[in-house]
Each structure stands twice: as C-alpha cells, then as structure tokens.
Image (cartoon, rainbow, N blue to C red; front, side):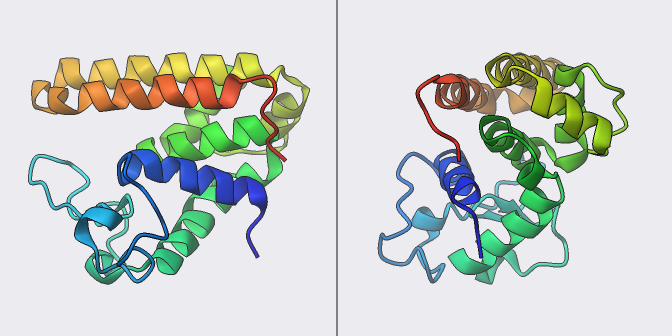
Amino acid sequence: MYTQAFEDAVNHAMLYEVGGHWNVDAPGVRDGTSKKGCGYVNDPVDPGGETKFGVAKNANPDLDVKNLDWEGAKAVYYRRYWLNASCDKLPGRIAVLHFDGCVNHGVGRGNKILQTALGVGQDGVIGDMTLSKANEADPIEVCNDICNQREMLYRNIVAKNPSQGKYLGGWLRRISEMRDFTTEPSRDFA
C-alpha cells in the first residue's frame, strides 16, 4: 500500500518525533505499549498536548492518541500528511522534506513554506501551479530554501514565546539533519 518514499519519510520523521532511539522493531513499539519507544508524552508546555509517535492530540482531536499503535500512526501520517500535502505528487527529495515540515508545522503552514520556496502564491493549497514549479525546480535548491524558512520559523516561535526555547536546539538539529538528508546529491529518493 505505501510507497518506498513514504516509508523512508515516515521512518526518518520518527527520529525527531519519537527520538534518536527510534526502532520500530524494539519491544512494545509496533503495538504501542512502550511509552519511550513510541515517544508518548503529555507535556503541559507543549502546544501539541498528548503525543504518541509524533501524532499530537491537539492536531488530531478525533484520535485516541494514547492507544495508537504503529500501523494506526502510519495510516494517520499517510492520509493526513502524505496525501493531504500532495507529497505523492512531488519529486522525491522535496516530498520527504515537505512531509517532515507538514508533520512538524501542520499541512497548511508546510504548504505555504513549500510555495514560498517555489516562488508561487501562498494559498496553502498544493495545486497544479505548485506541482508544476516543484517538478521544474532544482530539488536541492528548493530543499535548502525550505530548511532556511523553517529555521527562521523556529527562531520566531521562540522570540514570541520564550517558554518554547527549550525545544529550539532540537528543532535546529532537526533542520540541520533534514538538510543533510535531503540535499545529499547521491541519495536516491525513488
């Protein structure tokens, strides 16, 4: 059912959503019973609220996040982020980075970041013009621009709400690693 590009994107995103210890084959991960292995948190300072596998209750109020298993989480990521953000129609490396941005910032904001990188109108909807530009553009340049925009966004979040500063180091590491991952010329994103 899932493409290799989606599998690569969702597994890479879990390194940040769950943590560097991410291992889908660790005990209690697939069935969702390992709090640490699934990245289950409920931090009152985090605007996402209760979160598991990076799926935030505040962004997905219809879901029983606490009882989510890995297959359920993947289905959420595929339907609500991969397909909803038109990642299935984008060139591979742009799709992987765009997916990560939509997971982290929401689909609407992620779409606007992509549209800004492509120099098209920012309506937050991926349509024919955005897709055409994405398929004509240099994907490495687009990925670098997306990463630059996301870094500025994180810094602005902290400037406006200093309580979020505790997350800045992790956010910036995510961008640095995503930049390295998506701009490596020899990496194949089929």
